[in-house]
Image (cartoon, rainbow, N blue to C red):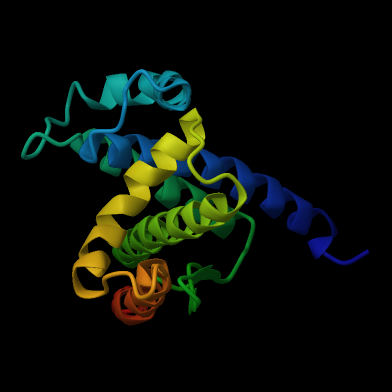
Length: 201
């Protein structure tokens, strides 16, 4: 059996566990930023899972402009730890926003730059997925409400609202999700690669 026999499943476990928790921390930050319903059951679930490490970080990291900077720092620390683990497992590179980032051959400073690129890519992906889910739910169960729909609406609305100003419904058809999706994809393609390339130096 090749050397990747155990490495591949181990990488799958590491990526899944780290990415899920990073996503929870990021969602907590975004939901606070967008003033989502704190008493929403999904919000409460996210808060309970992310409070222990954030409680420690907040002792040293104050809020910035009224926003929870500790959440962003925790996201970056978790991504950095994930990349370091990959180095230990001799993983040469990772995909960040569709670009290969050589984590094995870059400096620790460059690794931090990769972390920033990865976090930005994740933020854009969260908004993209929220818009897509909102569209699907509007087809499947229009007018219905549950805790998940409430949070999806809260995340998708900041992206869709500006689109609606420039693209009013045409014949009852709302094209704003289509253009919002396109804009997020283009933003990811234009913003993330230059940051990844910066980390190579």
